[in-house]
Image 1 (cartoon, one colour):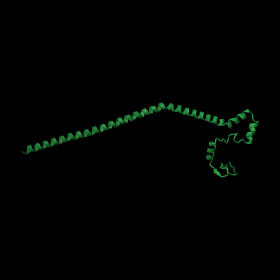
Image 2: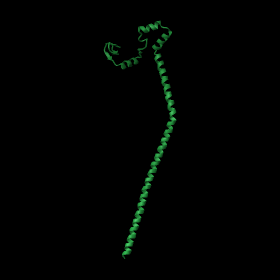
Image 3: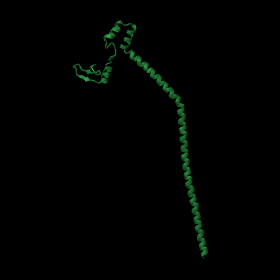
Image 4: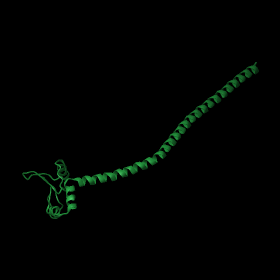
Length: 162
C-alpha cells in the first residue's frame, strides 16, 4: 500500500522484480482471499501497538487477539448478522402468511367476476342472435304479407278486368 501526500492511498500488487501487476483493489482482495491471508489478522501483520497489547495485555485482550487471529471474531459477527437477517425474513414471511388468506379471497372474487363477465358475454351473443332472428322473422312476415297483397291485387285486377 502506498500513501502519498495530498492524495488517497493506492494499493498495488507488485512482482518480485518490482513490476506493478495491478492497482485494482478487487484483484488484490481476490488474491488475498485465494491465499487465505487476512490483513486484519494481528498474527499476519503484527505492528508495534498490537504487540504491546498482546505482551502487556490482560487475559481478555489476549482472548480478543486469539479471536481476531483465528478469524473467529469475523465468523461470529457473520453468524450474528445472519441470525438478524433470518429473524427479519421470518417476520416478512409471517406478514406474508397473514396476507395470504385475504389474497386467496381476492383471487376467488376475481375468478367469480371473470366467470360472470364470461357468462354475460355469452348471454349478449345469444340476445344478439335472437334479435337477428326476430328481424329475419319480421322480414319473412312482411314479405309474405307483400306476396299475399300482390297476389290479391293480381287476382282482383284479373277479376275486375274480365
